[in-house]
Length: 110
Image (cartoon, rainbow, N blue to C red; front, side, top):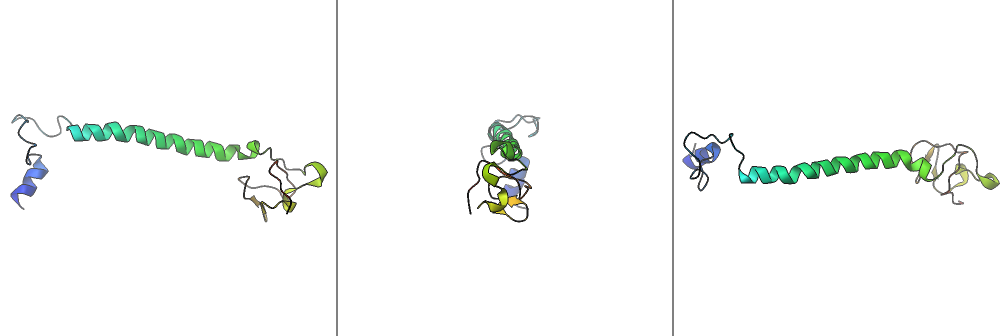
């Protein structure tokens, strides 16, 4: 093993060991680099978890957003005659399983 590699592993590489006292271990105090990483990474992780939770909430609220109902709408309009309907029980707009006899405000004639 090279001496430079051993110095880097022990934390005594060039410019790093000069300010440490002889009895102080590398694990006693985080380096400035480690502290900055923690400061930047923690809020980013929290933000990504919040966005993930918002996406799940949005997906579950989709039917409410489009006022989906399991019965036909005005004038006999239903999902089976909508351009967004995907047989047997899907839609490109409303998430989840839907009924071919259902209706929502995004209905568009085929």
